[in-house]
Amino acid sequence: MASPDELSYLVEEGVIDAVHARLMSGKEATVYVVERAGFLGAAKVYRARDDRSFKKVSSYTEGRNQTRNTRDRRAMDKKTTYGRGLLEEGWQDMEFRALRAAWDAGVRVPEPFFLYENVLFMELVVDANGAPASRLADFNFSPEQAAAHHLDIFLQVKALLETGRIHGDLSAYNVLMAAQGPTIIDMPQVVEASKNNNARHILMRDLRNVTEHLSRFDARLLRFANCGAALFRHLERGTLGTVGGPEESAPQGKTGAGRRGRDAERGRAGRAKRNRGPAPPR
Image (cartoon, rainbow, N blue to C red):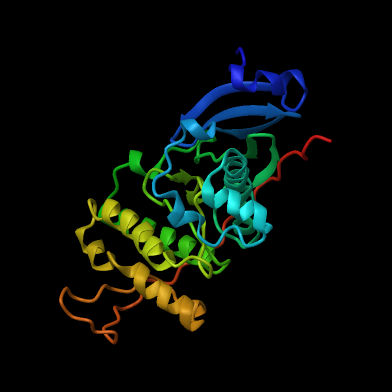
């Protein structure tokens, strides 16, 4: 198969051996199935910054730039040409570092291998048949399956929060139904919980998105619609380790801090060990 233009130079330079298929195209990148040293992986090609459609970027980037010098931070705040270039590099590097930290912590995400210019190389997430995994949004579930997947995804979100991070754009469209279980993808908008004043709201929205989708198959899940608020309180109190499942939302019109729902069946946030991919080019 002929290589798409945006990856042909990587074949010519020997970074990859072949491009097999375009896997998916999203608002910030296009993902391809590629081959390197006999290993099939995924190559995420980030769009040029003028072609991307992130919404309310400032809500995600708050707290990210403390490590930059004053000149860099000022340029990014003013969105000068130089500053926009720094922000563009930051999205890619942030996703790579967030995926690496999540993988190392046992969160079920694709393992990232390396960044090369504007391309992120990572594990190809596959289903039980070895084919590229489809999105959660593409399936119908029984009520029992929906409840099990909700618990599983909640525990993955909790495990990510234990690394100090929140996905930032979680929905049924960026969870893949992999052989090992629901797998979280697409993390360029990842939020550092301790540095972002919007962190609680963003966590609540992430979990509400997933809950409302799965409640189509089991309406009882709606009692967890605001479970992100309770989870964030556990983060603030240092009690995340006691959380075994989503807590029920307080009834509308009642504050009821003491109205905690019963925990769902305790699950595991770990993921099965998978083969590691190829080393980055030298």
